[in-house]
Image (cartoon, rainbow, N blue to C red; front, side, top):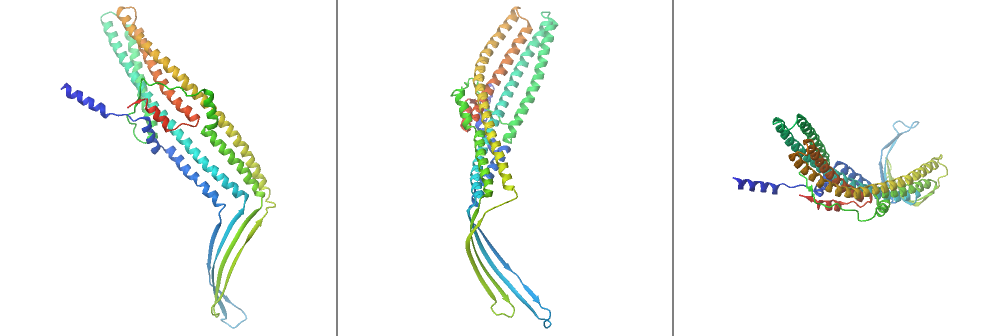
Length: 434
């Protein structure tokens, strides 16, 4: 019976698999409502260019009419009247030759398309970060729950030993109460850990619109990577390549165009107009009726002289918005620099913290082992053992948190420099155990 059971367990372990970070991201890419909204906004933004281009192209219109007219005259023999049935059509074309505002609007439309593309890139980077944070939050919550469970089990063993020692008179009731308190605390922490894991899973499920699958876990031996350049180099990249900064630059240029566009309200306009009309009037009593064909082509020039001060007001408004865009760009640049520095320090200090906590965990485990041995020979108390177990548990949780936070800080650093992409998630997938 033992061999088939072992084979069944082996097969089950092969069938279980963990979705890695890249796979979760692909699910989020297909199901996240926030990104889907950004994608539709991008598609809408692409239409700005043809709308701007339309202002430079000719407009053609076709008109047609058909009516019946009847007239009766007074002072003439009774019943004298006249009726007619006029009909006809007209075709007209207008080609703008020079309209300053239309030219600036077209230039703005190309900038609006660029803004739409940048905003989609921002949404994609945001999705990458949200997926990574949600993914690692689930893993961290699972690690905390496992650590708390192990701590509770260790406390239960100490409680059982304390009770047995008290029954035989080898320990006081104080040891039993202390062990019972630690065990009860472990139960409470386990309940809180289960709730936290449930909440973190719901956050991930919101992104992928399905139940959280089994996730690939971080390899305990995985090495945290340090940034490949100095902090100053990353700050320089962020100040120039951050997507929010790029959006700010585009917004500034669009604001400049808006000022020129509004100033164009004082500029003259020149259009080419061409038209053709064919009209007929069928009059009762007149064989064949009357017809006319009229065609024309010419230039139309207009020079605005006074429009109630509206143009000057719009110029002042656009100029104020230009200054606002300038300050928005500076704010985005400063924020990008701050984010790059924070993320860089997060990676560097996080990596150092991981190394320190690894050594601290080894030391804590050695301390627990020696404390248990000291309890057996009578030089340590049961409270010392409980404290040592608590130290191991706390260090394990801190180590797990530091590892995940360091990985997220690395992604945040890439995002601050405007270079975060799917390939960065694939690099993290190499650190995961499926």
